[in-house]
Length: 225
Image 1: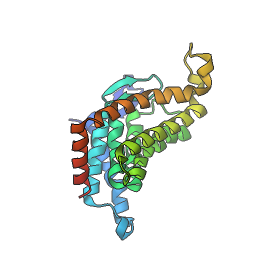
Image 2: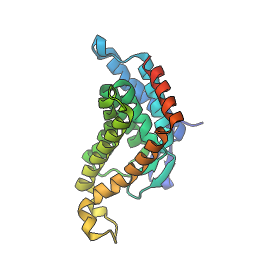
Image 3: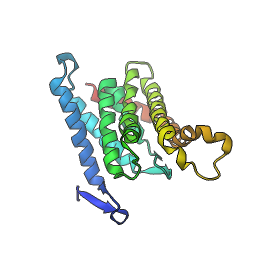
Image 4: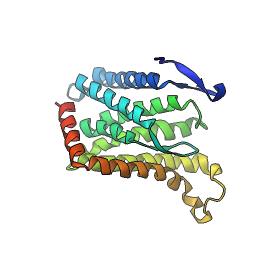
């Protein structure tokens, strides 16, 4: 199976193959977290166990990001729980590791996007690097009761806020014809939270199921042991 980039849409831009993207996310997160492992203070260094579980979680997040329930025309889609696996890293290890992993995931999404939704550098930073890094903010609740649910909700709302900011700065000219006039002022918020909250509700229902909740508790125990 090829790991190299392949032309898409008649060669208008390039994107990695699925296998290449999974391999790349593992490499990126290992590099970012390895830097922290080598340069962090003794009591704050990232362990090999954290590297391994973070890499696996991000690989799963990428695979699930391609299982789209809803895809919107100007970027963004509701997927099958892909955000969950990014937020899990923060839930396991706290915000420092979670945000680093989220940034790695954002870099992967940027590369995989092939430039199809890029207008300029600041917009790319808001929609990819900062927005996806925000998913690691789930780590601020990693010691809280019901920390996964609290952290997940906080993280996806924060991601939506950065996308919405980018929307106000760059995407207002792309409002579709027929969009209700009274809602134009909140178009970026409606657009971005439509798919984020849809995925969020689906995910929260799934992780609230007793078998899934117990499985996630066991995985956290393994990841933090």
